[in-house]
Image 1: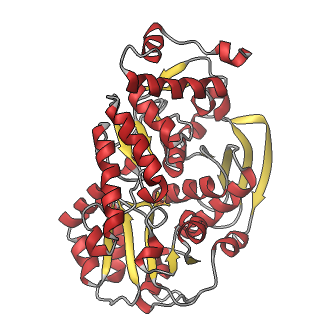
Image 2: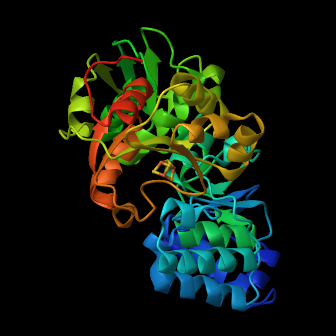
Image 3: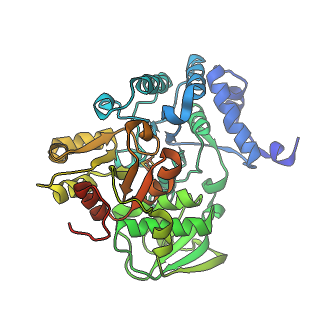
Length: 413
Ligand code: F3S
């Protein structure tokens, strides 16, 4: 037995759970949490206030993943803290209308049923913090989706490592996670200070910046100083998503903006320094070369009501040549429906698509070959995960592509 194995202390209740006194499902969850604690040298476990579970799309899970979930549910496992799901592989209500294959839909519904048996409702969003699941400052949580992890740690000041699908589910069932990494004060200090000297004019600029920072910093903690005006708050989800995609950044600080930066003393004395004064390398890496656009994808991370309002306003009275899918949480879609936004967007041919996203959906089977997006994360993953040619630019440029069916360097909206 190594030193780190001996270091993990369990309470009497946790030891009882581990040896099966709360049933085999809980014992399996504790085995996973304890194993991770030992691997990462945690001294204790910590209770979690909420969990966000990834591994929901059947495209990624496959039958082996579905069997694993069903077996765990059959062992009597149930979540014991508020838990939400990451996007599924399709819109759970409108999949047929949107063209998703029947066979895929049946398997996806089985995955959702397995999660329901474990006690998790099909929230299916990567922005749970936009739909009422908002962790408090300093709260320990166990979230899995990388962009949500980044937002929760950085913008909200909650504490989570980037969990995997099984480890997040184990935390939801046991109510605990191993206390290491970003749960600890010392690991939340910035490892590199980044002076951003170029202006940030759009969410795409912020995404390109996030891409460049993630590529440089990898799994470090950047502290960003914006010399030409701070980014708009609504777009911070885009920044974090990009950093987590090109690197493995799970926490960042922004001077005078994010809560731990405002509190001060958040930069390590030996932190490195970096200057970013040009976003072109980010755009060059993310933007492809295709001219014809089949699909315009907005809502990565999932769109807020404000973003849906912007789209509806920009497109009023226009006709679309390309498909336009705006992905969002179901409850956001319902709120947009009540405001008449869904009707306005869908009257001109756009779709407000709930529960899924274009990385975890079987996009190739839907017949799309090229995509325009305003999300650096989507532009980063879509070529490899969904075999799409991608153009990357601000929302206005993407909406213009939806109107014309082609990518234009000129913004006309
Ligand atoms: Fe969310 Fe999918 Fe983007 S999970 S962050 S919409 S790649």
